[in-house]
Amino acid sequence: MKAYSIIIFFLVCQFAFADSPLTSTYFADAYKNEKIVQYAQDQKGVINRKILKYLSSSNNSIALKLACINALSWDMNGHSNAPIFLKTILKKNKCSSEEEFVSKGKANDLLCYAYILALDNYHDVSKAKIIAQIAQSKAPLSYSVNIISALITAQSLFDSDWCILYTVCDNIRSNSSLENDFSDKAKDIIFEYLDLYSSYCE
Image 1 (cartoon, helix red, strand yellow):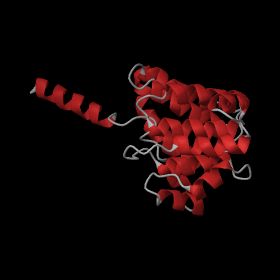
Image 2 (image 1 turned 135 degrees about the vertical axis):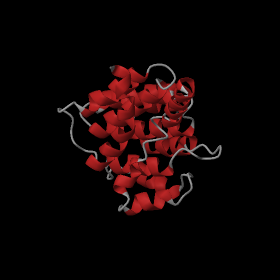
Image 3 (image 1 turned 90 degrees about the horizontal axis):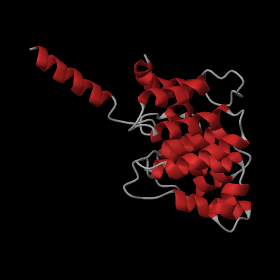
Image 4 (image 1 turned 180 degrees about the vertical axis):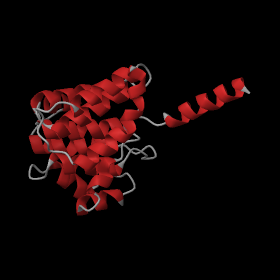
């Protein structure tokens, strides 16, 4: 009976963590009353001209842009959104290559690209992580930029260290110097999942 209980406990734990930081934090629900987010939710994971125009506009908030990307989600059946977004953003920034864009691009554009790239292939976020960290260095006080960068970093730690995974994101939550440019409800959605990992730091 004891052995059986241990097996059940193990299976429950495995099920609880079957998803990952990028696939289990659907914070678009916090912005579900926004028309652009509603529209993105209806696109079945495929970016299109209207969303590209919204994401590439400097007039729209970074939080809503991220919510749109989150609404597109990660189940794209092999469809890649990042190359399509990159083509648009290169033109906007008058860059001839991805390398030039990563070097000269603005924080919000870089973060959107990194987030789309990470959702395109959440099994390998190494490139997205680097670009997100560059975005973070260019907008060090934006909660939106910091938390998405942290989520991508957390994704990279999913198969290695769950305590560090949790700490990377919790450090953003506890940083009172950051600009509060992200919905409190969106934060709650993200940390409802991430707090599952806190016990691995005890």
